Length: 61
Image 1 (cartoon, rainbow, N blue to C red):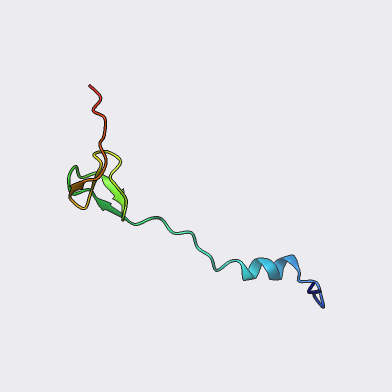
Image 2: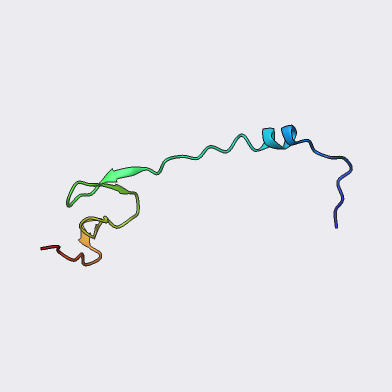
């Protein structure tokens, strides 16, 4: 098993990890109902994906 020659300090370790930035998902508008939807995902409101019915959504009456 590898054994480090010297200890890496917490500061040095943390500096190495600072370059990662969490990004917000890209949103678009649903072509059917107009709600905000993530790219490449079925619309949670109406169930459409790329202009076609992908899943059946129950109608609350």
